[in-house]
Length: 202
Image (cartoon, rainbow, N blue to C red; front, side, top):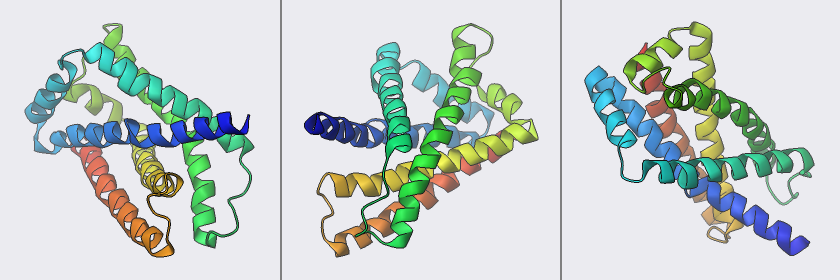
């Protein structure tokens, strides 16, 4: 039973970075084309939508990994004990924040998929600049998306730190300190990219 949970947690940790973290980074970069104008974003969006085997990629590289990571993450969030005491007070706060942000992201991502991918699937809208401009034209929805993007980036950056520890990549205190600087840089850079993209739509 312990071995099974160990493997499930390792898989949860791995999927959070590969492929979900990679997909989030790519998604934010594609959205950032909006800063270069309507045509630039539409071309980038069209390119991604017409990749070979796009349905296969969406199901097996995006949706299934996200669903497993989300559902098992919610289970962890509601059953997790406090972080082991050998971590700093700040790291324990980040450990708790990781759980709360994960629960929020389940709601945010479900809503985002409903407003975008689902609408495209039923033929109610086209995945283009105007779709996002219409969604973000509502100030409350814009604020919701800003919080959602920053939360997603925090969850990725903080999860990356945990991933490096969990998989034995950063074992020493020095290595963990450097990885803190690196993941902070990831958080800042991706947050700027994500928020600039949202501003470009409005």
